[in-house]
Length: 185
Image (cartoon, rainbow, N blue to C red; front, side, top):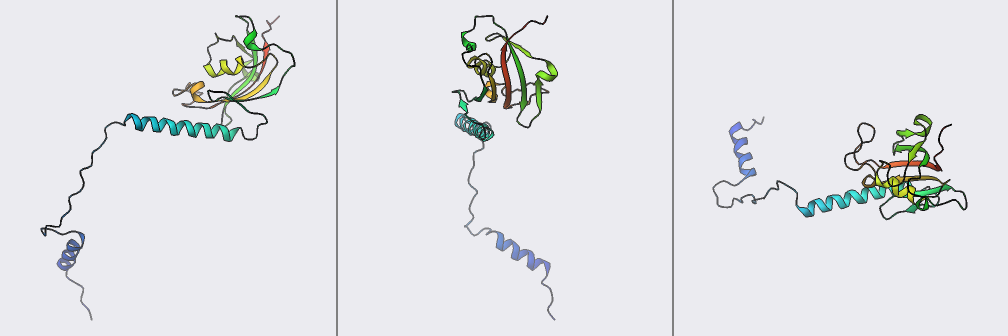
């Protein structure tokens, strides 16, 4: 019958297996510097990767659209319907007010505002208090156009969002029809 090894022998063997003490072969751990703050290069790389991820997400969301237009600022849009010969929004007189039958939502389908619930949106190009992406999208359209678009955060409500309805860095899905504002009678 074999007797178990004494505890002292087991501990001694464990110590000898895990390190060499006093033999002159000890290897000090490398002196690692720690970063308190990210470098400029770290931040640039982080933002580059984040922009690529958002761009890829928007591309993925628009793969089944017909004819996708991509602006230089990353907005993807598709003209669903138009009226031939209608005037371009950019050619309208200053102060012209447009009426937008709209649905603004998040990519998960959560509605932010719709014309069915909130009524048509009055929009004055260059003056309305909406993010620049909306002005860019509508400024490139014509009266009577029906559009759908995805507006990246940098052209929508950005890093801060618009709590509680719009989270930080939200891509905004837009469906709208552009008309001239008609005063209620």
